[in-house]
Image (cartoon, rainbow, N blue to C red):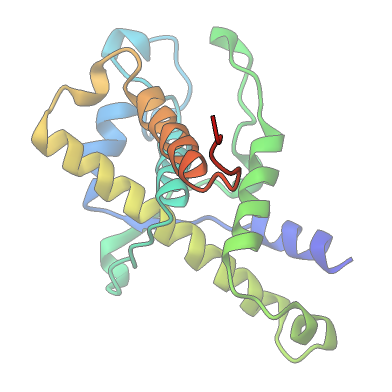
Length: 193
């Protein structure tokens, strides 16, 4: 029961991100603050809503396992204006489908990567609100690292992400590094031949 309540409370939240990325990332890659429109491709936008680039940034931080705290000055932070539970509830125009499972995967990753004492939570020694704040902090910090990573790539090469498979190549590189690490950890003995 705690998991369902925790999920509902988490999903009702709207994560923060640093305003400094608004021009360099959100407005560059998304139809940020414009809603869904058929003109997205005409303006060279890769994503529709701002939460889509936020999700990509979150997974970059998650797969690098790197967190970056947000600026503590609340005037330098903002939200996407849409709670997590509404992410992906877009029309099917343009061939896009809603993605409720993605929200669940994000939540599961946050549970795995956030140091919450679930026994204390079950006993009532910590509130579910505090646990959700911890989940949100983890999410925001992973996304903040991802946004910083994207911005660094853009500084090095302003056209880096305008290649057809740029974002895909970043995620494939995680897979390649994992398989390289697994090959090195192979416990099988060498052949005697």
